[in-house]
Image (cartoon, rainbow, N blue to C red):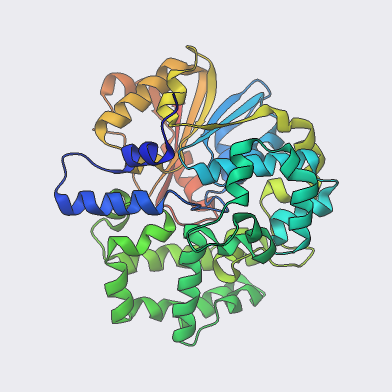
Length: 405
């Protein structure tokens, strides 16, 4: 029998053996994580696909999150993508996106539903085209109500990217910015990266010197909205105050990439993708890729599961690519060892593993047994280059491991 979502999340997050205060924080995060966290995933799929070097015979397993990346991988023509997630809301969002690709009449409807995501016409489209195609659990989720009594599907008529844990966090950040008389959208009007940097240095950077902001970001609970549990908060902070770390990450997001080519910046600074015909979008939302997605959507398999458990159900030497997002930052040594034991067992020749960490360094040395880790080559130089290219900018490191021959 499948375990309830609450049990799966609690098992992944709550650290046994820690002091009562730490466990209480973990339980608070587990409660917050039960609902929708990411309407959009915050890892760059273009960088992922470059790291994976996907070939037509590849079977990929990934953590689903908001589904943007799992769907985008289909554009690279893999044999199969298995996307798993502990979060019921993320599973429901992925299944809604699959139904939309299959059953909405055309790209215009699909774009209105997931790129604009704020039109009353989306609710009519949901009722006519999507609801009849959904399984009962997914339909029940979207037609149910959230903690404040709103029907969840109504998010697509009012701005789905303003909802969820991350959407609420970004909304609060916008409110704080306006209290300091800063309009976050101003940076999106900058014509050059030099102008982006000027605006950031003059208007955004000083916020992180404010006493209240420094105090607020010193509280681990303040970053729950980023999907960062207490264990990952410690890794992200390292030896610095969190305000300094966040300033550095926001500086990369705001200044290192042209805003007209970075949809992560649009989400952060405008809470959406904008409406310009030339707006940047995730690969799966781009019109040029819609026909391919329709052809290949049957290759995507969504599972409500723990990734280690899902790997345990796979045959030996049956998978080629593994995308772990930042999930390992949450894990104990025992969980890491089990995960990598299953990865090694299921890995085919030339397998690759891609993951991100809050800190800059890979967390595997000293935690995963050498008899397992020695079977993998850490592509350190390539990992650094990929990290620099990751437009989401919120992670310290992106890491690529390749199975040794």
